[in-house]
Length: 184
Image (cartoon, rainbow, N blue to C red):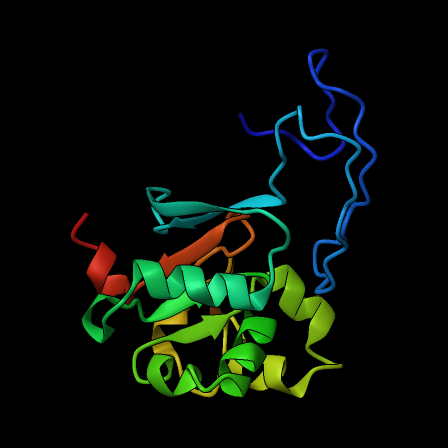
C-alpha cells in the first residue's frame, strides 16, 4: 500500500518520523520502537512518455537522490540503443552533476540530454551555470531543435516556444525526438 507523507491509517501504530525535504540529500535514520507496522517509502518515481504512458516505475525507500535516479535509469535503459534523447526531471542538474562526478556521464552523454522542467529552470538559471547551460528545456542556441518550435501570435508574427510543456509532468518524463512520437 502506498501512503502520502504524514498519512496515518487507523490500523497503523503512531509513527514518529522525520521528513526529508524533496531536494535534500541527507538521509536521517529513523529509530523505531517496534517493527510491527508496515514501512513507508519516500516516493514513487515514474518514467512516462510525453503521451502519458507509464514506461516504468519504482519505489525509493529513503530518498530521491540523484544516485537513486541514475541507478533507476540504468536499470530501465541498460543499452545505448534503448536510451531516450531527452530526460526531463526537476532534479536534472543534480542528476547531471552526479553523473559527471561518478563518470556515468561518459556513457549517457552519447545518447541523452538531461533537462529540467520549466519552473525549475526559471527559478534556478541565474544561480547555476551548469543548469542554465546544459539543462535548459528550451535552448535558443540550436543545440536541441526538437525542444523548440515556431508558433504564431494573434497578429500572425512568428515566435519561438517550447515544444513540450514540462510543467504538465510531475513525473520523470522521457522522450525522444518529436518525429519519434508523431507516428502514435
